[in-house]
Image 1: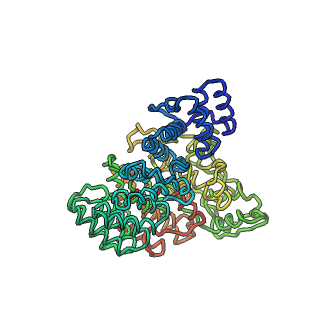
Image 2: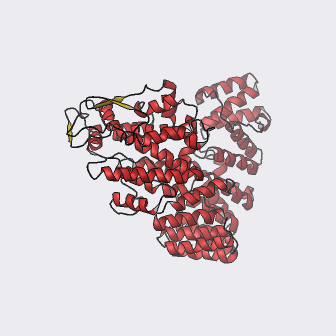
Image 3: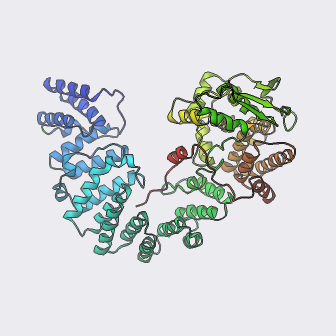
Length: 607
């Protein structure tokens, strides 16, 4: 159901439709009505014009034919005309298809759908199928802002249940919809009635989900247990029981159910995803998530999407987001970002020099702030040779490479983001930078463009100007992973440049380049031994330097180490010590946590 390119205001579309009607040009009138419906599907004036068109065209259904590229407005118009012609079941099918195409739009909020008599004109099986089709198209639960668009379907469910109070399939499907739109008590009532009317595996699953949404874990587990008794071979229910137990902290029991499913079928996707997620929750070892990513890569034809990997990585340093920079300069920048004075007159005195990217961010975003450093700047790379990105005018760093092209800056601005579902997803998203030239990618590291004029860009600029710079550097390094991929890794330009950056002057770019190498290890098992060795050596170097001076990037490097596949136990222990000896890969507090929660993917849909 593709969109139409020319979207006039609704009033103009209706005026043109009426003019075409007066001239007897029904096809053009139909096109304008369809365009109006796509923008305002419940507006009475649109439906009045559609009724006039139907009267002039012998019902009007043929004016809105279906083909492989039917415009959504035309499909909705045909739905209403089919209902008016005595075929509401066919009309509902088209409305449900429109909802699947754009769930946030209230396609069904019209009188004939919410009228009680509709439930008497369609079979309960058909009503159940419509409700299940809608459920499959929306997240579970539906965000509050999206629920009004589904209100008509919930009304239809209630009317159908009133007419067919003992139809188990209808009651279960109605419960599934009610649960998704936050009507949890109603969902429990309908699902329980469905199980009483006809006990079945699917009915118990619907009841279990309803109880779980209501916070009634004991009843949920009992219902899901009865579902297993109905069908011991449905391993998806085992995974659901495991997930329910995990949600209340009963990890050992949860893993037991996941292992039972894997004993029956070691490749069953739901059990594999659940088991790896639970193992990670139990001990925090990233090896479980890497194994899950490998499974996803090796089994691209899973029956449906899973959110376990993304759920485990969400809000965790480098696994699911850029790690915020640390240090006094960064703290001062964040304070100044929300200060009316914008840092004017502020002085930050430091015993050790901050990373050059931090000083450049101060100069670019808070020119009134002064940074006084007692010690000499760390101007030399950690290993000799390699690419030089910075030159110094006294104590002030300046880029030593030309700026990127405007086209490269625009491309990165479209892609860069502070969060990603997991490292392989970040790698895939960075393919959009594959066509950038090497000088552009390197130039972006020290000449970050301004944030985009989007909600995310405004939040980054307003709350933490350092975070956008780090986003640019991270995505530029991810772009390097896609540079000349025809070259074998061992002798590739991309590998050589990233290693240069890892061992260059101590900077935020060090972290970005190391993250790119860690990401390469996630997606390519062949490079894991080398990347693990590089990470171990770089972390050891930072730990050694930290004995004599402050190393602002040390904490972030430790988080990167704990996100690295195949890392040796000694380096994992060092990383944990650098983080204070706490639990591996903790979820830190940060100023963008609420934003990242909104952007995180949902878990897989439930029946």
